[in-house]
Length: 245
Image (tube, rainbow, N blue to C red; front, top):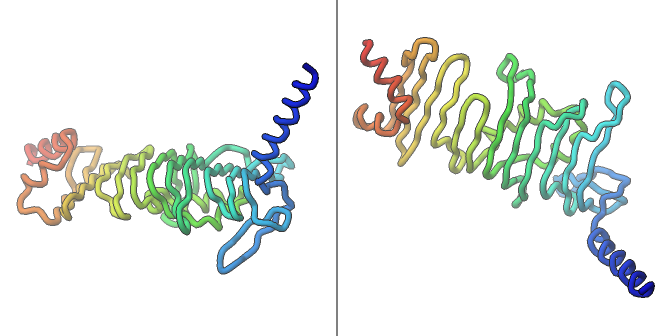
């Protein structure tokens, strides 16, 4: 019986060695440039496996600011980004294809950031599924201080190439980098965009008084053709505005 137990322990150790022996994620870590690309090295070899990055924040506390899966020295799987307070801001689950193409789901959690590109404050709570273009170099360099920069540099509505996005302000769908359908609210204005068979409609509606303030039609012969594409709840607003005029 003792021999059997000893044999089982040896087998368990062998299995664990097989499972973890191929990983190279223990450090020390260095970042190198090779052929114009950034690579993370662990113990002088390209990193492989799950790697957490721990930094000291302003209060002197140690915070895990990222959890990223690497292969051949580049991010090649799921990743999580946190701010210096330790709150998860970006969570991505999926796989990487050639170059900087990520295929999967990306979530951004309740982050309030100063939008220096467009001015003002932006509140984010977003989830998108599909194919994205994201520069992996940014993930390799991430140390917790660039979270606003990540969100502004790679906003989901822009880096999403194929797929759907849901935010606290609305929804949209994209195909081949083009918005084919969207409905969202910004500054008390309801926007509706629809595109199909190279036909597109863009409507802006003032939510305070349900007044249509812009109605752009491209590729349609008449307004009735436009109405066929508009969801019933939005069509009701449009019709109501027409009745008042």
